[in-house]
Length: 270
Image 1 (tube, helix red, strand yellow):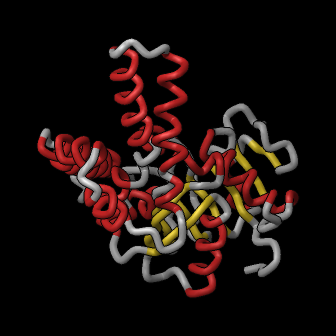
Image 2: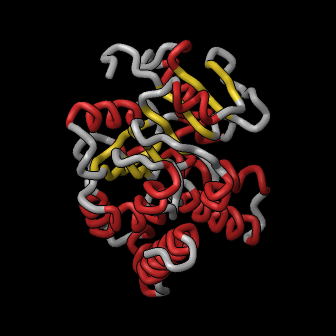
C-alpha cells in the first residue's frame, strides 16, 4: 500500500459524512486528489477536486481502501464486490459478517464517527478483523484522526455500544441546550438571550473538559464542594433521575444498533 498517498474510495461520497472525510483527507494532505474516488448516484458532489463516478466497480478497481458511507438501510441496495480491498464501514448497525457477505472482503474495519466529523472534532472508535495488518491499522488510525480523535477497541460489540455513546454524541449536548433554553424562556428571558446563555454553558464552558488532564469527576467534586448554587442544581438533577435517564438512553441506542444489525443481516443470518 502506498505510504504517501493511498488510493481511497468512498461509496456515498456526496453524503455529509462521506464529504466530511473526503474533505479532511484532502485538506490534511493524507490523500492526493487523483487518488480519491467518490461515488454517488448523482455522479458528483461538493468535493470537486476528487474523482467522481456512478460506478462502484470503477471505484473498487481504483482503490486500495473502500469506505462505506451510506445509510444502513440503503446498504442492501449497494452493489459492491471488493474481495481484495480494505473495507472500512462508517455505518451504524451493520455487522462485520453482513459486510463480509455483501462485499466479499476479509479485511474489514467497523467505525463509529459522529456528526462532529464535519468540524473535525469527531471521536471515532474502530474495530478491525484479524486479517487487517499492522500497516493498514496505522493507516486507518491516520484517516480517522483527520476528522478528530480515534481509538481502536477490543470487540465489535463495543462498536455497537459506541453507536449510542459517541455516534449519537452531538445530540446529547443539543438536548441539554434545548432544555436549558426552554426553561429560561419559560422564566421570561428573551429567546435570543436564553440561546446565548445555554450555548455558553454547553459549548463554551464545556471546553474545560477538553483541557489536558481534566477529569469530569474532579470538576464535579470541586464545584459541589462549594455547597452553593451548582451543588443545589447538580444534586437535584441527580435525584430527579439524570444518571438513570442517561443510562437508559445509551442502552436504548445500543439495543437499536443490535436490532439494525439483525435486520441488515437478513432472515436466517446470525
